[in-house]
Image 1 (cartoon, rainbow, N blue to C red):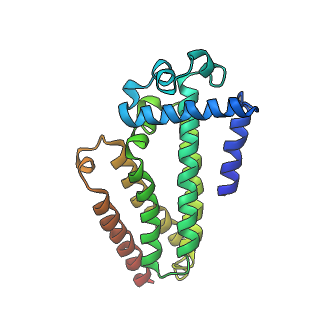
Image 2: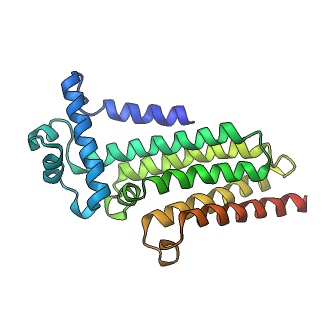
Image 3: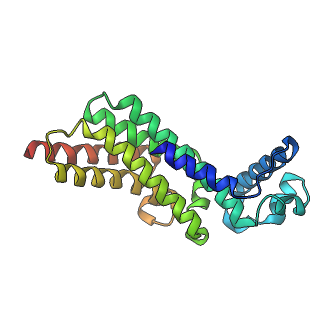
Length: 220
């Protein structure tokens, strides 16, 4: 699933005006690097083509030769973030699937929380409802489906005793407990989650998810 998702991102990128010459690729990288830095420092309110051009020290026309506009740049950044999230989750699932149930859930939680907390300012801007274009929403839904499939596959060996329908429901609930906590925290709009430390989210939501699964397993 990760491979398929990444292929979609690659296909989307090639549908744009992707430069082939080394100098032009370097310019594109400078634009994205400047846009990334700008989002981290000033958020969506300070994000503009003029500001990106100033920070990258290139003419505005050079940006429009490579991107359709501000939304196109945001989409490129969202694609990159989505790939990082998918890769982090895949790595955690592959290295922890043979562990016990608690360790598996903790590893998954650590991967999700780790990605969002390490780039909190960037993620807050990219997940801001004001920039939720149809393409960006599609990217979010695609990566969510991808990491769920990875999580579900790794979890399956730990809940084999559960009935198929119960196991699927349990996987969806645990996945939502962890990922929705991270998304709610990073968006910064919920007064309850806003000041909740990332380390506490990782610890307590992981414990809640494990307790829920163990209760279902005990019920048989």
